[in-house]
Length: 602
Image 1 (spheres, rainbow, N blue to C red):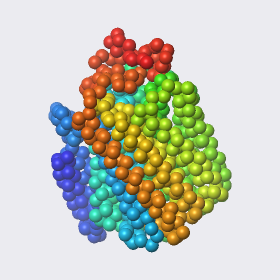
Image 2 (image 1 turned 30 degrees about the horizontal axis):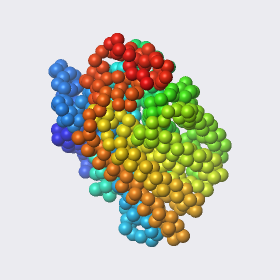
Image 3 (image 1 turned 135 degrees about the vertical axis):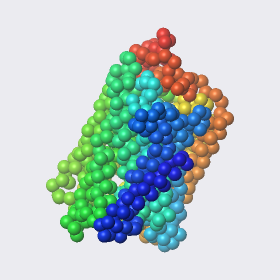
Image 4 (image 1 turned 180 degrees about the horizontal axis):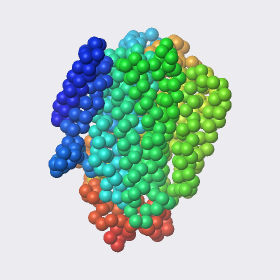
């Protein structure tokens, strides 16, 4: 880390000096801040990557030297450049959990201001800056935490592989993330930015210098997402164990595969939007500035062409994680497995033709409105198939209501509310009335927090024994679930009423008639925040002093549970051979054979 920071400073000095010299030779101000920041950033990024381990573990080979693995043994490997997919998965999970908690603290600051009308605890400008920071931190978490964290740790195990297809690229994708957090937090020292997580032009072209840090961080998250997505695609296509046909893939692997496909296809669009904004702002081009012949609607189209598929990049991993947990704790096969895969594929296929519903009030031509109303409503069909798969799995199952199962069931309960309320935002007449109100805030949080983040906790509790080799405290786990579930619904469900009453989002004040409801929401939000203290205590104490876990404490069938907990360096003592599906409970058929021994069945 220290070498990385030193490399970043040295790289930035080189890049800034180079652009300053070029500007001086062309007769313009060589010390203008924004050109120096933008031009120096790529050099700083290269210096950071070389410093944290790319030079030792990879780049030395480019100049004819032997590579030197940079990861030390023991716990220190989690703070170093490692190519072990399991270490990278833990790095992602811990990093994004910390970012998630920081984003939650910023949300509580917003609720302090909104507890009563007419307050000035956070002045309007500061409120908007905190709101913008909260939004982008939560989006970064939602885009990457499950696919990058659990995806990295579990996908090779679930398909019987030794590692990801490109281990060094895998490490590179993680080490692009710490600069994102550093950029966003540094921007607050420079006055932040107040354009929200969407960064709409032309406001983003006139905003404080912190806006530049936002644009650069968004590009970095996108680059990490593309690299990681391509790695997952190749890994799942090429490295499946013998017998692991497409029809035998665990549903979680299917979700990661389809999500990676979306990341690889759509992320370039938002990267272009961010890059063009920087060009407009720093180099005087006119892509989005109407005064120079540009169009702000171009930015919205580029942004939402990525950002609505990104909603499914966030939520599909939450769905499939919950679907992965349900069969093992219901002791029956995943209902309509092939239809569920088809539903996921249908959501992916339709995700690229619904973005205009975010722009119904933006002045787009009227002819587009009924078309995108129809496509947005159409996507509810494959989504419904996924829900039916979950309900069918639970139906007549022998339910084992441990903490992972409770969180998995809550994923579909919460997302049902998010999906139903999304219908109103997909229809033009109601969307015109509800746009930019707290109805949208409630809908979005039920979709992403209620769906994906509850899925994240299902995964943390389910795979905690696998990752740590220890068991968590089940009583504290259930306390965390019920506390978080009740407080979440008490926080966000009343926001639908606030939206229907006309309360605008992203504004620090509101009509006095809504004071009581807002006070209730603020109190509930602090209760929601307190629930995570139970989680942190449980994880920290259990990871350090919890009882040792069996290799397969859940008696599950999938491959990750057919090796030790935690797994050895190469995952399996001998290569596995898959002989049946992963969820065939009650059939007497094993999922896989390891060195002549059948994987567990129950």
